[in-house]
Length: 185
Image (spheres, rainbow, N blue to C red):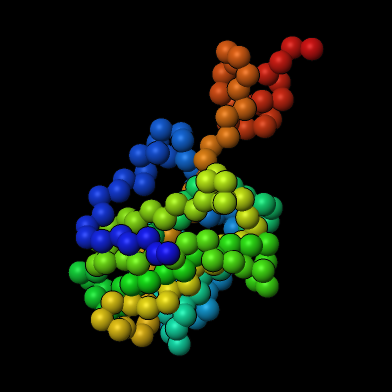
C-alpha cells in the first residue's frame, strides 16, 4: 500500500535536528546512482543548495543507492522536490527498499507524491513499528509527473534518532569518548 503525499509540504526538517532528536547520517554512507547527466550527480544531490539537483539519464526506474559501513538505525528519508521548477522531471511514485546488500533488498515503503513543493519526509519503520535498522537503502523513482522520463531530486537527507546514553542525572554526552569518563570507578 502506498503512502499518498499531496500538495505543498511545510516540513521544517531542520527543527528536529536543532532540538537534538534526529541527526543527518547520509554523510556516513557511500552513495551511487543508476545514471546521471554530467554535472548533475551525487555531489549536487548532497550539497546544501535547493537550486542544484540530480538529473537521471536513462530508463526508469532511476535508483539512488545509500550504503552504510555498519548497520544504521534510520528514522526517515527526506527529499526536497520543486514541482513548479521541475514539472515533468518531478518524481511521482517512489519505492524505498532496504536490506544488507543489493541482492536482498525488500520494499519497505511505496510513496505517491502529488506536486511536491519543499521537503517531504518518508518515515521508515520495521515490522514492530520501530525505526528501521539496515546496511543499505535504495530509493527507486518508478514514475514522474506528466509521464516524464528523467527525474530531478534536489536534496536528500537520511536521518537517524539520536541515542540517549544517559543514566540517572548524568549530562547527555554526544560522543563515546566523553561518555566513557562519565562514571567514577
